[in-house]
Amino acid sequence: FPETVVAPSLLAADFANLAEASRSVADDIDWLHVDVMDNHFVPNLTLGPPVVSSLKAAVDIPLDCHLMIENPDKWAPGYAELGAYNVSFHAEAADKPVDLARNLRAAGTKAGLAIDRDTDIEPYLDILPEFDTLLIMTIKAGFGGQSFMPELLAKVRTARNSIRSGHLNVRIEVDGGISASTIEAAAEAGADAFVAGTAVFGAEDPAQACRKLRSLADG
Ligand code: DX5
Ligand code: ZN
Image (cartoon, rainbow, N blue to C red; front, side, top):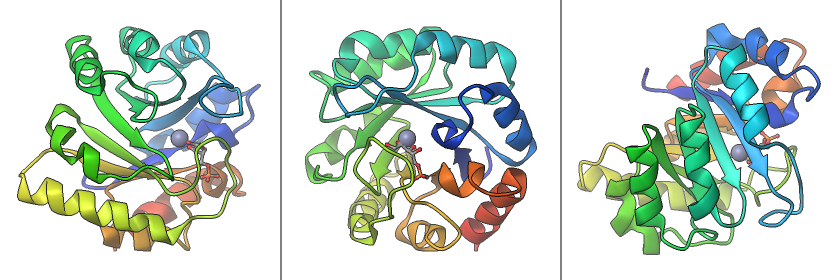
């Protein structure tokens, strides 16, 4: 994958036409971000394994599954088995994050640790070598269309320093309020994977929006 990963979030797409929305941006993206919400970990409900399975069959784009669910220890490996490229689960929800990361990798997928708005990053720096991606929320998880919170980039800076000094191979993904007006600050803080829902699927030309985001992130 290139230095910069652009990952549009299907949360902002038409749920009756997910494959079509995915194909409309396929040439200009690296991963497709799929937000799984269970109405328990967050007060919103989206989709689960059957839809991920159908997407996997319908489009040839790596699926980046962001699980905003309780008990990921039990449910996350199922997404690996469906062929997700990366499976991120929330630190706040996992009982044994290291064991789960190892299970995901053993199932053939990349493992991601997601950190919500109110969670500090420091307690998790030690376990970063167990992960391929670190998803730092730049809003409170649960809904698209919220305003980017620049103060949360402090966590990105902390994580970037730790990854650099440990020579780790971990991507830092930012999620929430990423747009043409916020992506440069996130990239400057050390993010190298960018999720954008509203800024892509709310745009008149989603593919063009992806190209714009990439060029801004690349500086
Ligand atoms: C929200 C999801 C995000 C969401 C971002 O909890 O994790 O991926 O789609 O939407 P925007 O880009 O509109 O903030
Ligand atoms: Zn997400």
